[in-house]
Picture: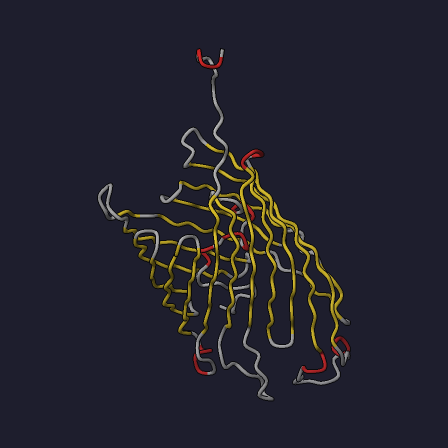
Length: 301
């Protein structure tokens, strides 16, 4: 199974908006998050240049209670060898809230613009002279995209989401190469098992998974974590034919910090020292205005 070419996050469960626009505004809070990741540390080319994939993702999203909606934005930086991607994605969804307001269903859409560049001057070719690879400078192009997603959740109980990204499979010419953005599909779900009695500080066991596929290849992430008092969490993750990971984090009055280390289990373990990912986020809780259903009271007469 080849390595997955989309941005890879071990702590994907901390903010699902990068894969699914329906997750925007899913919490009753304005949330900003940053992921920073270096994949396969120590990976180099034949000239000794560092070609480890490096990613930074900034997300901000919030609910719009008056419109029963959620909005958000993702800013993405991704560098793989001598190929760099810088992009922005704008998310919107409409959220259907059930009579029990802890349950909701959201349908989302996102529009993205990715600027992708390749520095041909630093590439080393096994067979020089390819007419498509004659450029000796940095070339770039802009690629638009459309994502769609759906998400159902019951707060602190269960969630499930399905989405598709780059559905238009748009393309751009980068040098003499026509670069087409690959279409991907995602499915994710998680469940909160509360192990404590009502009235005591909650202790949850939370299994979850993320499936990624381009309909030719598939990758599966499975993890389980323990969360205590909505404050501390730790867990283990496993990525099929790629890595096993240790994760831990803390939530201090809305400020969230997380870290993970992936131990590579594929053949890349011979040339890399694993992967490191850091997360920093903050959520400011907001609530919808309470509407009075009736003013039939003598004090209002």
